Image (tube, rainbow, N blue to C red; front, side, top):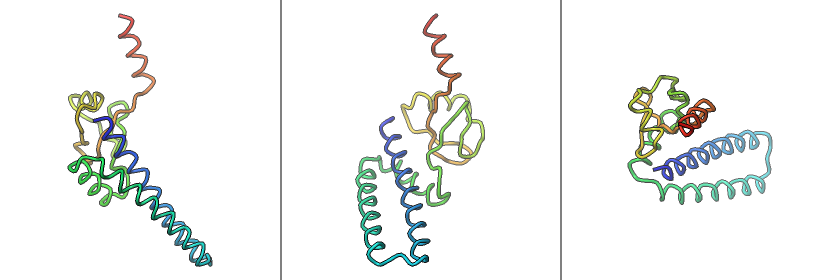
Length: 136
C-alpha cells in the first residue's frame, strides 16, 4: 500500500507541475513568446504528460478514480498528510481508530470530513515516542 501512496503522491506533484507550467505558458504567450518557444514548451508538457500516463497505469483503479475526482473538484490536496492526528487538507481531527490505520498504511484511508487520501507524516514527537518504546 505504501507504494500505491507513493505513486499517488508522485501523480499529485506532476499534476501541480503541469498546472503551473500551463499557467506560466499562457502568461508568457501574452507577453509575446515566440512560436518556436511555445512549440518547445508544448513538447516538454507532452513529455511530462506521458510520464504521468505511465504513473497512472501503476495505480489501482479505485484509488486513481478517487484521486482524479477529488483533484478535479478541489484542484489540489487529493493526498493529505496526517500530522498529529489532523488532516492537513481540512484541518479536522482524524478519529483515533483511523489514525492507527493511516500510520500502518496497510490500506488506503480517506479523511471522513473532506475525503482526501490520508498519509502519515511522522513528527519529532512520534519519533521520540518510538525511541522510548524501543528502550522498554
